[in-house]
Length: 476
Image (cartoon, rainbow, N blue to C red):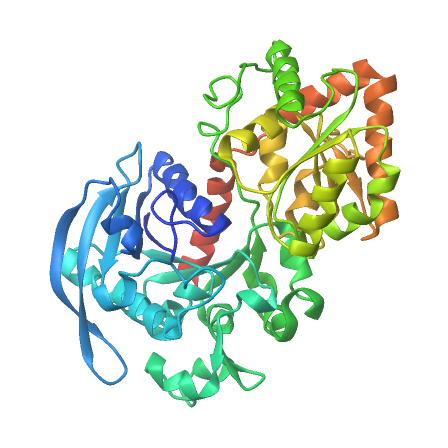
């Protein structure tokens, strides 16, 4: 199948969040399964100034905007380590800026114009390229307008929701609708206006042939207003057209047997290297070097959505284990954890992001904590299991789908789960895990093997996306 994968960010070329990781990995898995998949994204300053080889394939390609004809150039490169083509849409005024969506902590005032242009360009370049996809895979609100422009036609469209929280819906003043080139009486445009605002996520939800989220549980959760706000009714209206497909991780990039950023390597057959990684982590975080003390790791954004308020409240009760915390975020939470690190020998905190330390936390911890309020998919729990570290998670979104404490038929326990969004529930789960670590080392070793044996490779996910694409094609 010929698939065009459209995304506003693609790792390693430009990244703000997990969307970039998916866009840089899923196309590789699809290509490995025999599909002709190509990726398209804006040509940001990070790409213009980056080390990647590029070839100009189009110049002066007309791009229709609402009230004028614009144009773009197109460069071609390859996803690293592959033959998968990636196209960069060039427009100096829109994309040659320091940030992807805006300056740090802000948004560009013309983001609607920028992403309308990109959506138009995605379609405009196909004919001059001489390549016509059977399906276009759209990702989050940034590319949702493509589905509107193609409504009722071909190629087929799939719209993936990576996050449908109210802050991630692409909302603009209703008066800006003309920027998109649409009118309020346009067949699909009636669903774009939500609560007197233009809502681009609503465009993808309403107009794409098929829709999916990044985990089965999150697909159910977004049908409730608490997770998707005013868009819950649209999710409900799409019914069986909304699927949930769990993300994967790159098993080449995340491999304790080859990871160059950890001090010792290991695999399921020999875990001696993991013990060495734990000692190195304890030392680097200023903790007592002792293999018998349960060590809980976190690599996270310090905010309430990630459940760090629960951990902050529960800290006084977590005296029988060590904590290694890496992240930045809410200044108030940063202060809480910084003070804990200064006053308690069993707490180590680094208020920054450091990739090497993040990998050491995945490898050296016994447990990896993710107490999220909501989590569309989550990758940390998958990476942790890849490194033989047992996740302790709240039962929401992809965490509920990937971490199993009470196995059903054919399943194995690979972590610990708590239901209620309370500090007491979080503390109880950590104490339960720590008790097992101390008192039943053989059982713990079995759980580590279960975690190492859980398959979160992208090939699993790619097989599900093949079925989703087939369902979308049937609708065109």
